[in-house]
Structures are given as structure tokens and as C-alpha cells.
Length: 188
Image (cartoon, rainbow, N blue to C red; front, top):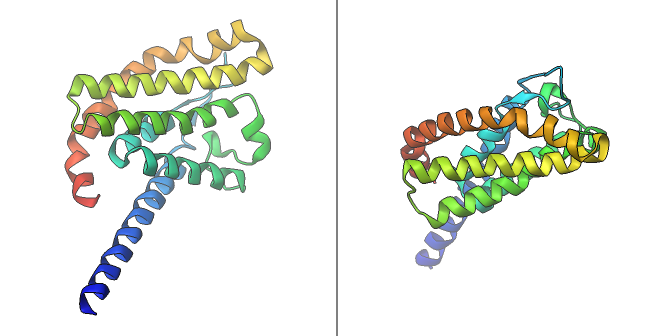
């Protein structure tokens, strides 16, 4: 009987840890994603949200990373001011920048998946995973933006200006992940 009780407590602790990691990731995204700089030439603001999400996906993995982003999106859909510049709600999610939010979800799963398959990727592989995740966010976002401004403008307004920043943010995120990986491995 005590063996069954110990197994039950272990399962409960494991579930609590999973929920805590997902909830913590979602809260972190919700706190930092609103910090954005509007740009005069595009409806897409400059933000660290994508790299934060991709970094969490590396640390949490595909399922927990996806769940954290899904919970973040649910918070915004319910009206919490967690999107860029404190925006929220379903109408914002369907607006010109809504595709980037969907891109967060897709990229979180993909980046988490690839980082899980590599176990402990080298710095170069980690940078590549993060940059490809950034490009995925930009492309999904631009596809949706094209519904509002056309394909050519969407690419020029929603992808091209953000590629240099994506390179820089991927390098910074890679360095931060390398330093914090030990902490998350202990927590996970």
C-alpha cells in the first residue's frame, strides 16, 4: 500500500511540476511581450516576444513550450493586456499582426521539437534552430499580414526589416540559453 501511495505522490508532483513550468512560461511571456517599440513603416512592432518564446521552447521542449504559448494566447484572447504594446482580445488577434501570434505557436513547437531531438545542441545548432524559428514566425505573420496589405508589401513590411534583428536576437538568446540551461534542467 505504501508503494502505491509513493507512486501516486510522485505522479502528483510530476503533474504539478509540468503545470508550474507551463504556467510560469506563460506568465513570463505575458509580462515581457507587451514591451514593444512601434515602427513607423509597418504595423508590426519590434519586440523580444518571439525570442523569449523560442528560448522557452528550447528550455521547456515542444509540448510544454507549445502549451505555454497556447496559454499566453488564451490570456490575450480573454482580454488580458499581454500582446505587444498591451493589446488584447480576439479582434486584435484577427488584425494585421495576428499571424505573428499564430507563428509563435507554430515556431514554439518546431523549435522545441528540434532542440529535443538534438538533446544538447551545439551553440551553432542552437543558433540555427532559434533563427529558423524566428523566420517561421515572420513568414506565418507575413502570410496573414498579406490579407491586409498584399503579398509584396507584407514581405517588405513584415519580414525584411526584421531579419537583421532576428539574427541578433537569436545570437543573444543562444547565449542566454547556454547560461540558463543548467537552471532549467534542474527545474525540469
